[in-house]
Amino acid sequence: MNTVGILTGGGDCPGLNSVIRAVVKRAKAEGWRVLGFKNGWKGVIENAFDELTESSVSGILPKGGTILGTSRTNPYKKDGDLKKLKDNVAKNQLKAVIAVGGEDTLGAANKLCQEGVPVIGVPKTIDNDLSATDYTFGYDTALNIAMECIDRLHSTAESHNRVMVAEIMGRHAGWIALEAGIAGGADVILIPEVPVDIEEVCNLIRKRHARGRSFSIVAVAEGAVLKDAGVVADSEKDQFGHVRLGGIGNVIGSLIEQKTGFETRVTVLGHIQRGGSPTAFDRVLGTRFGFHAFDLVKEGKFGYMVSLQGTKILPVPLASAVGELKVVPMHYYEMAKLFFG
Ligand code: F6P
Image (cartoon, rainbow, N blue to C red):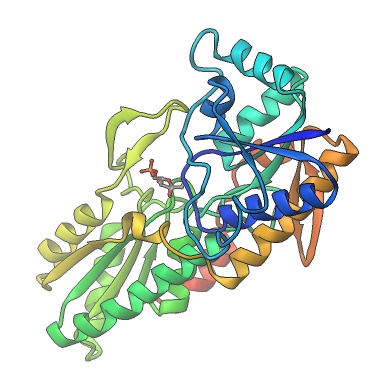
């Protein structure tokens, strides 16, 4: 019997279970065996898997997270891991491994393919920063959560005449902050792509308050940087070399209070944005990605990933997705600026 493996790697995101369910349903309909590897590439290195059946995926569609678990394991980090991974792919006679992940998991998938490991990619990340696909699943859920938080901050900001700073996820790209800010009517939006001029931010707030508004909402992506400063982060790095971000909201909040004299509070949305049930959009996109990933498995289109192009799901080379991150284009940010202040 033909066998396919599946794993979920990197930060979890809503919609992962939709992909797993679609792959299992499709594979079972075509008489294949499915091995669900645990905790990303770690599971393939350690040969830790469960055989997935229709009953393993029953009821998982509305659940957040991933039933397979995830990790940020880099198979190229530790001596011997790559060999173990390759041996386990051969031992389990896998026709393909479906890797569901973001820049790191798919970056490793791309390298593995070049070494002959049969991998198919499925793009996921709440950050929506993968190139070669219009959207990744997980983004829509995170965006809607962030928008709802901005809506909620509005009423308390207005009652107390405060400036509220919302720190929103987005490591290298400010998609969630930008679009949640647009959708939620934030008065200032700060993204990693544009270094923050704190004087300009304070002037926008001052002008708004001079016009009679007594509160302001500032949406800031966690990867945003002050002009002439670096990212605010822990020194510890993960296996792919990323620092843990967080803290820019507090830095910006203190500066705003200090410079404008307006009472300011900071809310870090954090992992709330990644948890919980996926939106309909993410469930459907995950389902379509899983269904079509199985086509690529059957066609032996290794080194490719499924992508959303307009309304179509199309295969694209993994290399085109992981080469360069999809950041917010300046014309879009310029549009958003019309609504600032
Ligand atoms: O890549 C997705 C993401 O949620 C980023 O927005 C964020 O910087 C990072 O993961 C947080 O990672 P962790 O879950 O390891 O804290």
